[in-house]
Each structure stands twice: as C-alpha cells, then as structure tokens.
Image (cartoon, rainbow, N blue to C red; front, side, top):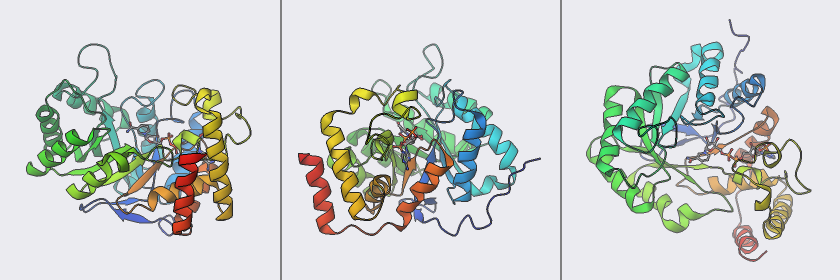
Length: 333
Ligand SMILES: NC(=O)c1ccc[n+]([C@@H]2O[C@H](COP(=O)([O-])OP(=O)(O)OC[C@H]3O[C@@H](n4cnc5c(N)ncnc54)[C@H](OP(=O)(O)O)[C@@H]3O)[C@@H](O)[C@H]2O)c1
C-alpha cells in the first residue's frame, strides 16, 4: 500500500497548453527521465522527484528505452513507482517513451526499422508495467531505413493500441516534413516534435523545424531547456561536486564550460537578476515565450530544483529591450 497521497491542489498552479491542433493538453513543464532515474541514483531520490512533479501538476513524463544507466533502468524505475504510487492515477498521466538509439545487441537493437520499433515498444511496456503508452516517438532519423517503413510502423503501433499518439524526435527538417505529411495522410497525425531548443541552441527556430511542426498541426516540446544545467546558477563559481558535470560527465563535460560560455552565463544571470528572477527561470520562460512551443522537458536532480523551476510559470513577459539584450549577449559576449 502506498504512503503517497498526491496533493489535492496539484492542478491549481500549473498551466496546460494545447499540443498543436490535437485534443491533448500538456503541462508547460514536463519531467524528463534521461538522468537521475538510473541505477546510480538512489531510488528514493528518484521517487521524491516524481512525486514532487505530480504534486505540482506535471502530468507528462518523458522516457526512452535507453535511459539509464543501465539502458532500460529509468523505465523499470518508473514502472515500479507507477505500480506503488500511481495505480489510481494512470488516467491523469501522459507517459511517453521512444526507440531508435542503441538498446540491445545485434542488427535489430537500434535505428528505426519496423522490427526495432515494435520489439522495443513491447520491451518498454513490460518495464513500465503498462498496457499502453500515451506517446511513442521515433527517437532519431534513420538514414538507412525507408521513411515509409518507419512511419507505417508508427501508424500500425497506434492501431495496435500500444500507443495513443506518436511523435518524432531529432528528425532533420525535410524528413520531418515528410513524416508530418505521411502520418496525417494515414490518419495518425504526429502529435508532437521533440527537439533541443534553449537560449544556447536555437536551431529549431533557425532551421525551421519549430515552424514546420506548427504548420503541420503538431506541437513542439523542447528537451534540455537548461542546456543540461549550464543555463542555471550551477556553474557560476566552479563545478560543484554534486553537479552533472562532476558526477555524470557522459554528455555534459567540463571542457564545454569555455571562457566564452561562462561569460555568457554570467551576463544572462545578471539580466535575469534585473528581471528579479533566477537564470533557470528566465531560460525556461524564454522558451515558453514562443507560442509554437507546447512544453519544456526539464531534468531535475532533486524535488527542490524541480519546485524552483515552477517559478517560470509566473515569470514576467519579456520586453523588446530584454529580448534584444539576450540576443546581444548570445552574439557578442
Ligand atoms: N529527444 C532526445 O534526443 C533527448 C535528448 C536529451 C534529453 N531529452 C529529454 O529532455 C529531458 C531533459 O533533459 P536535461 O536533463 O538535459 O534537461 P535540463 O533541464 O536542460 O537540465 C537538467 C539539469 O539541470 C540542472 N538543474 C535543473 N534545474 C536547476 C535549477 N533550478 N538550478 C540549478 N540547476 C538546475 C540539474 O543538473 P544537476 O545534476 O547538476 O543538479 C538537472 O539535472 C531528458 O530527461 C529527456 O527526457 C531528450
């Protein structure tokens, strides 16, 4: 029997945004399981983060088959929490998973063939202890598999009832456009496109995937909205021992903290202070300021961090001068 009683006021403070032209509302902040849910993180720490998220109205959890370490561990961990804490709340949750990155040995353990996507989703459902996920993504573009094969597999997955919606992540513009069109023609419109968009990486704006998703009726969700922690106060004065760079430098490495990047972080931090908020708050609200964006997927290594990030929901709008000052910092510092 769970000792967890979700907060009765959990839906009072969150903002929900319509996902493209679909019927789905997603919270402006979603929770990602890439880090902090693997075997190296104490289980009770992960559990506390998930409970804090749900208590704050975060109904959307973003997973992938390979999130760990070890690959699969984040799904298994969430599966346990769903069983222990959320059995009575399944219909309040919108759970996403993905396939296409390296998962198991041999020729079918990766990429975007029908074989990989279908087998991987079955494995994910078993780890998550679910009959279906709300959203299933093709996690990356596969240049060697015909797009029709990948996309038809997504259509068939929805028809099978194992996912309610499908999405595309990290597909280049032309392939994404083809995908949006294919899925719509087959009556399984792409619910959402997932790409990295943050103050340091504005590629979806520059390259056009943000606009293309919007035009096709899909939502857009940004991953790594804080550039894995760079766009916070974490690294203003060195590398703290409990930070991602120090304890899990698989993807965020100390040499990414160049003097230029540090100088931009400091200047952005000063600008955020002038707005009366933390840099993380400003970084998240800058993304949400784009009307085509449905949600941002935050990572959090503690419940406190997650709660602090909720401040972006009440962040003041940006003036034209502030938007200009931000771009000047990014272009010139
Ligand atoms: N589709 C894809 O290919 C793809 C790729 C990457 C990620 N994603 C998704 O996006 C999610 C989020 O990615 P991410 O973890 O890189 O997101 P992020 O929000 O950019 O970074 C999260 C990290 O920033 C630090 N942080 C967060 N809030 C903070 C605060 N208020 N003050 C100081 N530090 C703070 C924490 O690091 P510390 O550990 O230092 O505390 C935290 O773990 C993933 O979990 C995954 O679901 C998808």
